[in-house]
Image (cartoon, rainbow, N blue to C red; front, side):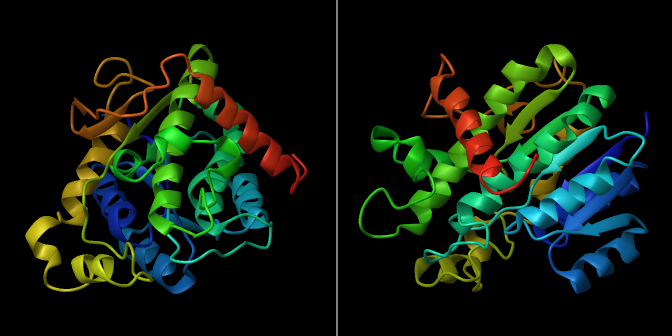
Length: 283
């Protein structure tokens, strides 16, 4: 086995934490990134691995994280796993809707700032998407200037979440198109319905389903879900999985309703993310 240097964001809990543990047990060098200092330090101590703190609702944190990661000798895998669904419309200090910034803009910024290192390392970049891209995204009204808002007068958190998870898929397609020949291997995966802290701030059926004993009826454990991330992180791109695709299970491609076969939306999303970030931070 070739020992890899693997960076996982959103690794203080849930899927990221479980994947970090499995990858450490396989002998890889894992670097975890979390927002909560106490939880992230505890996981890092338990796994005996390096860690960094970063709040993906702050571009300044993401830029500082990229500065530190660029000091590494190499990055074989970057797993953009951090994500959230916010129950109400909240703008970050950078002026963006919070779900959009955490799920789309900050992973984009981190990856963008690491591009030279990722090319040099011939890295695999993994996006954690969701079946919400099929269930909640508004395909017929899909407009890139509204991806992070409500598409109407009422803020709809799961529409916003679904749009951001679709954006993860579109971003993966364009990253593959743009950088495949330079050595970057882009892929996404759908983690399943997982028993994590997802939706902890929500109410109603989401809270009932994810944060009561009912969750054991239809969810899978973070450990089982993490196997999908671990598979992609340890597999050979182009042989074990096809780059630019999204996988729902190990070896099984996810059927994405929004096809974007000519990459029109994928390329426009890339340009929009770049514009949104350049308006707030000097690259």
